Image (tube, rainbow over all chains, first blue to last red; front, side):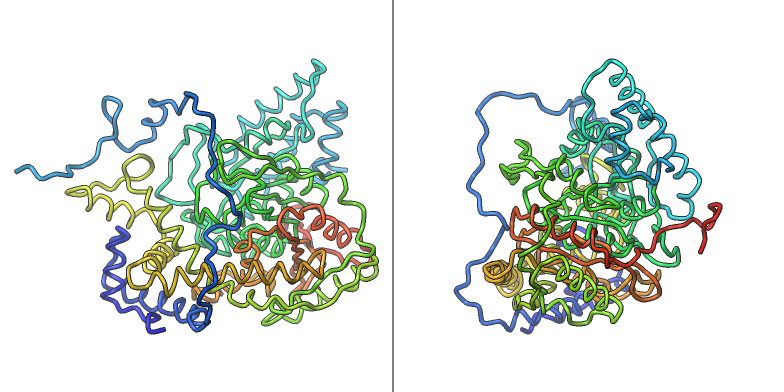
Length: 100
Length: 490
């Protein structure tokens, strides 16, 4: 498996995908640590297990439904009380769409 | 006998009979915490007022002749990744500092209904990612048996609290060994139930297909008593099973039982831990079980599969910590910069490492080779365990390959991950596993024996654990004696 070495640039890209700001120095450290873990995982990369069904979940279960009845939910004010910023019953976030 | 030396069942019986009050039980434990938690740092938050209030309510209910539940007045330490309405819940992460959940985890409702009292929230590796509690965003917890060593993790605070007699019972969560490994390192009992036996509602998710809540105690019977209270189907957790746990038959012994020793889990085990396992095997044979070696070949690949699957699920689960709805926000120029800065500041290094590892494993081009393959390996592990259970009623192994290590000794992530090599396979298979202390290994530190059973085989698993605990051949388990306590300090 050739995917067990991650470069510093690749690490910066992954960090951005995961919305983590990291410095170039940190990227170099993470790159070597992630590479070491992936190198360890090379043992399963080498397994010839084509055709084995994947297990997503230890318990096989079908969709679980509840009765279609209206129930109470969390208290809105209580939920908003723990948000960094809220106004008029809504979460406030920084600007998403440009002004122009 | 001092209240804090009693078992949870003795405490509850005495409270129910009116021999001692719940308030006295709570005061005794708060006193221990006040006197000694500075040596251990098990708690992130001690709920003094709430615990006293709750104890008084229980005492009043008893005075009125009301039924107060099987764990009446028993203090329980709770890992701080379980939500308790209105009480700060952090997962030991700076990103959740100050967060007060608007809801309560089902397990905490159940223990409260049983008369138990949450005495505090315990420390953990941030978001339950780690094996030493050194990754807490706030401070490290020390092993009560030797404060220069880690208590294990991620439920290190809960294990340490029980070992230090700050509470007779605790709740932890186990995604890859986070209950069993610290139980082994601190010399207490810790059990990870079958996936789905205990509701995960209100447990802040790390890897949803692997996470499971379970009990810590100083005896097997106490652990069983707590599991009996928390095991049940919950409409709020669609993965919970229509099953419970009956603790009444765990004392029936192991005569005639077939027990396998998992060969793949003997590699790399320290000589002291090996000796502990050998002594446990002898004790089980002495109790009438037949014990043989068995191979579970795919268990060798557990660590690799786990470190792809668990980070993948974590990278998705932890996307919710974005500075919008709860917890920390570090304001940026726009929403993307706000996400980047909030997560940079709020998460510690190990959490970032796992999020990145998971993001990578799930990314285009690597999905099939990494995540997909890991899920196939999961099938192999379940299959190999099933084959072993055709010949054996239960399996055993060391819980962790070594005793508690010293702070900073495992700064390399992969060496830290190795301490869960024996516990991870049962999470991948969804099977129950528990650690039972069985004497001391290197440097006089405690070491546990791990007992496994097939899915929903908790009855069998606890029978084996009981037989180990009851064995006349069981060596003494090292216990905590505060250096500050009169007559303590060996």
